[in-house]
Length: 422
Ligand SMILES: Nc1ncnc2c1ncn2[C@@H]1O[C@H](COP(=O)(O)OP(=O)(O)OP(=O)(O)O)[C@@H](O)[C@H]1O
Ligand SMILES: [Mg+2]
Image (tube, rainbow, N blue to C red):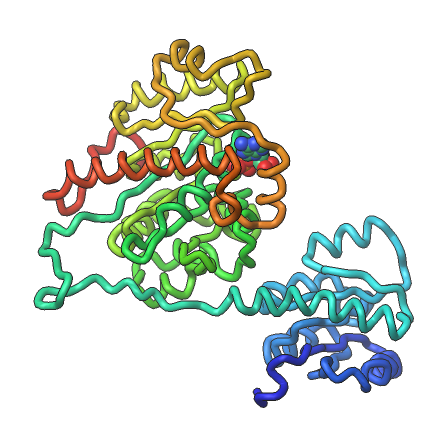
């Protein structure tokens, strides 16, 4: 790409009527920051050109002879995740808009658009495209394990990375919020860390981290027999903070393709390359969750201070007991604690006979802002009480994981006997 075009907004116009394409081109011809890189007259052509031309913004007509604009939108985003699609439509139907949004469209413009509307909308969404483009620059896995004779080689007994599983039998208690923050806190140059979205159907780790998913765990599951640093490096995303992320599949039905044994293999591979692996799990106790728990060095069991959550936590502890999960590997954390709830953490601890090792207060405003912006708490203002609690929790997690490492230092690969999972 020519140097001076790097900052320009790359636009693709898609419409089956040549006159419409030409009119739009004319409206934009004097804008110094917008360059029309292509125009397509059908859905199929639009997809082909998007892959080839990598536009920041695609102006998309709705009805075309071969496919509708929604299908084309969906397919383009799959191929060019940073591309921002603006739908041009005569219809103003709410249902249609909803479907288009779900397919990944960013904005709508009534047809024919005014020059001002068109230009300001393109500029607005292009900003987002630029940010996402930057995030998508794939960094190779620079975590080569030192070989014999190389500096840093620790001998065959180099401990494997420690796996922290975050789990609650009840949904919505804050597992993802905790997993993202703890993973960010654990990640450093000396301790490379990967956050794995184990909620394969409805995982939202990427949303919490404001990352656009291009590749996901599906792409590794299907290639478990040939995993190497190049393949894994291509699939992992690197967040600005330095944390690596292995995202959940972009669509829930894709989770069906993934088997527990494949998840195990992927996690085993990650343990050889990262100091810490944090897995955010779905609340369903299925084969996948069991496989993760089976490999976990530390299980962060999360609950909130309300009766249904406490009841489910009790069932979980009973189940873990039956499964002979080592009690010392459980770390019980209460989230959304609130003095006004009338249930203290001491009461919960006593009731469940389980020490509460971390407490994060309810703070709707702060958490909602960080989640909606995709900027985890520990990357923002750390003076707030909730951030201080998170730092305390992080310190406890580190202590527990380091203690675990010391106790298993001589073991090359610790395989807990298969008491559960397959
Ligand atoms: N300490 C907190 N204070 C206020 N709101 C919180 C707190 N922790 C989490 N939340 C909010 O609770 C909701 C659920 O959080 P989160 O998605 O992390 O839970 P989860 O256990 O991962 O849920 P799911 O089972 O659906 O994956 C989110 O809207 C989040 O913003
Ligand atoms: Mg979650």
